[in-house]
Image (tube, rainbow, N blue to C red; front, side, top):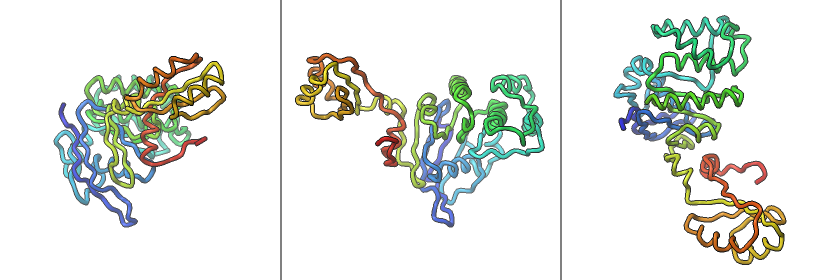
Length: 299
């Protein structure tokens, strides 16, 4: 599969000491690529370099063989962008702004724009000044998608959207991928990343700390099971044979183990009557938290 976006040793340090350092990424054509990290980690700085908004201090970025800094206008012609912080002229209506971008890009397929407006279910005749955050987000999404770009760079694209619209966004990304287009998705919504992305990179303090296929997370060798015994006495007997458990109720436990230990667990658990025996899937959020050592609520 063709490498559409190549980032080699990208470095940019700011006067305050923050920045990005030796970022190396290769994003394939037709891939949905997740880029994760908390605020200030370096996500937006990396994205601005891809767009040609910043000159690298060191390193190179190419998009479809085009130098992102030296030929940024060519890159932007094949790229759609939703910024993390949306700023639009408030004196215009949504439809006026959409038409303005349509004309700047010299587009011809207005029917597709109308399809996108209908898809996002909102009134674009409202003044931008009076729009909610979610409505502004929809205008930005339409402007990013309407020229059917080869590459989409989406920074927190569903911020302000309700759960129904977030699901519509996920469906739209799947359609884009099926068409062979490439997406870079930066989001704090882990389920959004899990449902759409092929690979994920995690950035911490300006450096890539993980670059992993989503399948490796989904089929992680670390397993977790929830077991609810019918009788409290069974739990006590089980605990005598199987030590690696967290008791969270009088007859309920959480079991952490490796894939290779599954056979032993099945042998032991088969001796007891259980009401519930189910695997708790390892999530992207847990994987992410391992790198940042955050504590979830209740832990």
